[in-house]
Length: 200
Length: 200
DNA sequence: AAGAGTGATGACAGCAACTGACATCAGCCG
DNA sequence: CGGCTGATGTCAGTTGCTGTCATCACTCTT
Image 1 (spheres, rainbow over the protein chains, first blue to last red):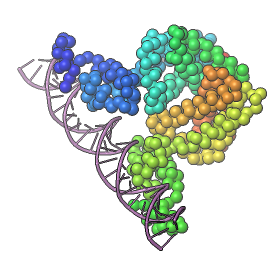
Image 2 (cartoon, rainbow over the protein chains, first blue to last red; image 1 turned 90 degrees about the vertical axis):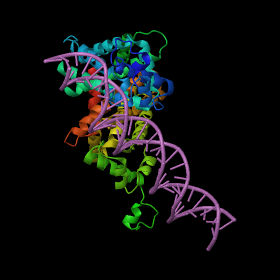
Image 3 (cartoon, rainbow over the protein chains, first blue to last red; image 1 turned 135 degrees about the vertical axis):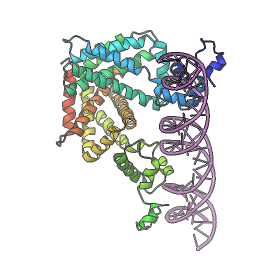
Image 4 (spheres, chains in turn yellow, blue, green, purple; image 1 turned 90 degrees about the horizontal axis):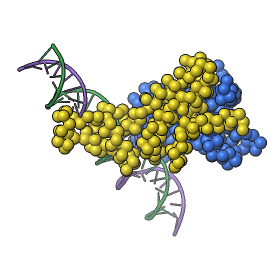
C-alpha cells in the first residue's frame, strides 16, 4: 500500500509521495519521542511514513542512523571552517572558529535540535551512536589541523579537546530555558577549558 | 550437554566446569580475533566455552559487553585515585594522577590489552561500545572532581579533557613496538594538552 | 537419611533487527 | 511503441536477545 493511494494521487500524479527519506526521519523522531526508541519498531516507523520496513533499511543502515542524517553536513561545516581559518591562528583557535561555525548552524534549528537531543538522551543505544559521530567529527577535525601543519598527536589532542568543549556548550544550550547564543556558550566553554588546563 | 561430560568430571566432581564467565570471555576474544566480531555468532562463542547461547546472555547483556568486563575495575581505580589526590592539587592534576593510576593497571596486562584493542578497532560496533565506556569514565571522574569541590561545568571539561589525553596516550602505547611506559606516555600527552590549549 | 530447597544451566518458543533475491510498474528515452 | 530504470514491495531466512519452564547435582533441615 502506498501513501499516494490514501492521499488520492493529487501531487501531479507522481508515482510515489516524494521525500521518502524525510518522511521516515520525521516519523522516527516522532515515534521515538512518543514511546521511546526501544518501544518503537521499524515496521511502525515505515507504516507511519506510508512505506515498508524494507524501504526503511534502503535509506538507513540501521534503526539508529535515521536520527543522524545531519552529521555529514555538520562535519563539512566544521572542517571547512577549520581549514579556512587564518594561517596565523594557533590550532586551538582554528578549532574554536570551527566549533562556532558548527554551533551557528545548529542554532538555526533550535527546536528540532532540542527535541532530537531529548530523544537521544533517553536511550543508551542512541547515545552510543551519537558518541561515535562525535568521534568522527574529532577525527575529521584533527585531519584538518594536520593539513594546516599541526603534528599528529597534537592535532588529535586539540581536536578531541575541542569536541569536549562542544559537548559541554551544547548541553548547556539545550538545557537552558533562555535563548542563549550557542557560539557564545562555545567561546565561554573554550575559555573555561583553557583556564582548567592551566591548573586553575 | 555439559563440558563436564566431555572433560570427564575430574575436577573434584563439581557439577559444572568453574568460571563460565571467564571461559565465555576467552572464547569471545579468540573468535572475534579469528573471524571478526560480525562473523561470530553467540552460539559459537557459547559452544567453544561448553555452554549454550542462553547462558551467554545470562552473564552478558549483549554480544559486545563480553569484551568490557574490566570497565568497572578501571572506573573504581580512576575514581579512588582522583578522590585521594592531595587537596592542594588542582583538578587537572588530580585527573592526571588518576589517569596514571589507571594506566599502571592496564600496563600489568599489556598483551591482553593489545589483543583486545586490535579486536575492538576492527569493529565499528565495538568501537561504539568502547566510546560509551569512556564517556562513563569521564562522567564518574567529573563526579569525583565535584566531590573535591570543583564546580559543575569545569569538572566536566576537566574530566573530558583528561579522557582525551588518556585515549591519545593509550593509542600510542598500543601501537608502539617498544616497551613504553604508559603512565609516562600519559604524562607526556597531558603536557601536550596543556601546551596546545595555551595556543602553542 | 529423606525430603525440601537452591542455583546454574538447558530447552524451546517467539519477537524484532537486518539482509538477499526477486517481482512490480510508472515514467522516461530512444 | 517498447525496452530500460529506479523506487518500492514481497518473501524467506539468519541472528541477537528475551521470557518461561524444566532439570538436577548439591545442600540444608529436620
